[in-house]
Image (cartoon, rainbow, N blue to C red; front, side):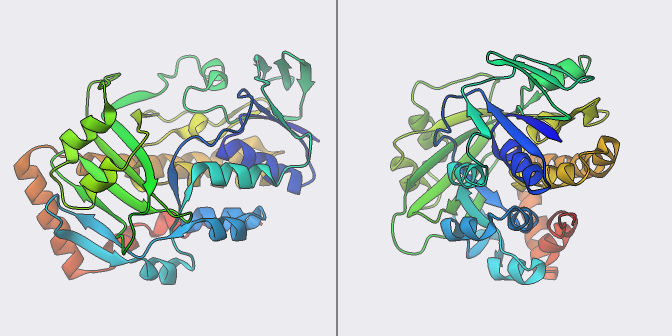
Length: 370
């Protein structure tokens, strides 16, 4: 059985690895000429760590990642709204939440493929879902399964579902930076202000990953994005302004998602995966995690794509909706709404310290199929 995977991001590479471990002949096509170290940090939650274990990459990722200690949500003045210890999550789910640079995860997954299975600089020009033919500049490949892991703006999704509205702008833009660790103890946390968020996570290589979000017009850009971050967050508690000041590169991205779920994740021999199937907001840190789940479920049901859809569509739809809800709460801009939100969260934390963790049970207790 032969599979062609379109896209060598996290989901596509994971699908290639999962399929070859089940005996498939695999070719992964990637438009880019090299797997460049692009992107920034990403959370690998317990559900995703179990997938990486199933793919033979879990231990390596643990070695290269940063383990978060104290975590929670703070106010711009530094006071805590809610606070927890990462060890509680590890005890509850059997695994911690770790943070790794995206390039590290991509490289580790690519290393699980055999020589020749990853073909760089070779995009898929066309796909026939009925025959499984994939047209490239080097000729036509015929597959029993075509995996479309071609991202947020997936051409394959657009072809299979031409009436679907595709990704929509959420009204929120994001900034990401990776800076040297400033030394001392650095607390992993998000800070929520009036419509703005700033997050800090420690990587495992002596660096710190920071992300920020704020409402903005679609496509808007500042002449100096670092200066823009300092304008928005420079009067927040330390180490927020110091971390921004240390940045040498700022990546700004408008946050888009598939607000309307697809009717299914397959047509003919083609299966959609990851952002191509269910792009979601980053507020739960589950985008890459859900793509990893997709990969192992697809490999398990590669000969029964309706079952793949039946298992993955309801779950990813609910995770995406939960992420959107958290995003709306985090981005409340009215001062009164902000105060009420903070008071409610603080009260919930006092009445039930494990309340937030319990709410994540449906997401984080998931286990890969055997």
